[in-house]
Length: 199
Image 1 (tube, rainbow, N blue to C red):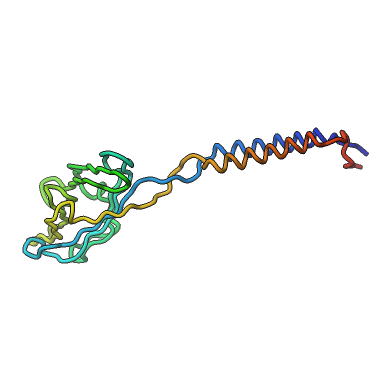
Image 2 (tube, rainbow, N blue to C red):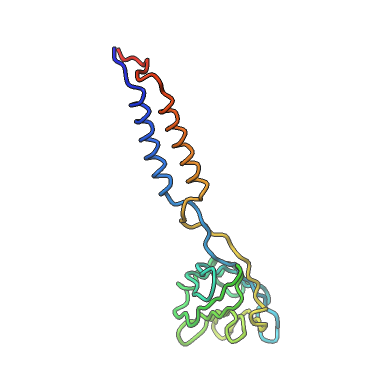
């Protein structure tokens, strides 16, 4: 039979738990990235040849000030345009001529985005030259959604997007509390020998 010192067991447990807590503290949890959905309508049949609404997402903006989007997607538009959705704007268009969005207080307060293909349509604009526009050229016909109301003609809605971030402060506090409880148990141990036997 053999006896094991209580303190030795406690210290072993303490070291193991401390290592686990350290890993937990260093492991990224969830924070929030800045993105927005957008939509605009064909507001004038005199100019826009296809009635309906264009909807999509703008991702990767800085939370304050002016920055460029890291991704832009068109998620839906009138079927007459013939696009397949979701449409990755950066992959579909050969030229991103303008990519500028200003954010303040969690909202987009200014925007200018212009994507096109070299020489010809299709084109996609968000408040470029005070117009919002999505078109595709099909043979002799140029089909497009056109909104001439500029920035006020676009509806922007904030999105919450998960990205790696630091462990929340309450997680660190919990880890610290557990380590204190273990230290107190070690100090209260009056018997240096545990009655655990191995035969």
